[in-house]
Amino acid sequence: MSEHNGEPPMPFEGTRFFEAVQMFSDDIALKYLRCLWFYWKHTHCTGLPDDDDGLRELCKCTPDLWPRAKALIFDNEHFFKLEGGKWHQKRNRDFHAQLIAETVKRQAQTLPARLATGRVSKSVTEDVSTPVGLVFNQRALERIEARLDQLRGQKPFSRAKEKKEWNELHAERKRLMNLLGLKA
Image (cartoon, rainbow, N blue to C red):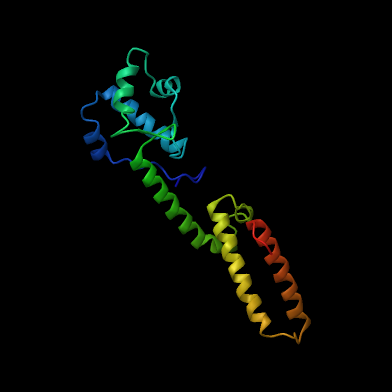
């Protein structure tokens, strides 16, 4: 994982790449690799806009070389395919989605331990726009619900400590439900 933005590095399978571009000149193969990297790194596999000037600039093509480069790289079949007004590379898109899902799963599993040791700030868990924050807050809500169920079995409370815990759990439950967009 790249440390500065959480984006997994783009995998490079040299054998597959060079087999796929064996009919390309080295110049065109490099332009295709540049497009793959930009697709992964900057659009996070959400697509390259269907803009001839922008794609030509991305490929660093001269106007006279562009028609051939575009016909090979953006062939709408084997390399980049136009879907919904954007160019996609299916293999990279599928692999990117798989890596993100695995990363979110790993982060969600280790987040409580990392929070306990102070290796991640609590602000990460409060941002539900990130998959990790969403998963963390859902799990926290599940733990609170389980503890509230335990306390319900002990009512009426014999100690002020139990009453205080009950009130704190209800307040935290309400906060988490609001954060997750659920009705309390």
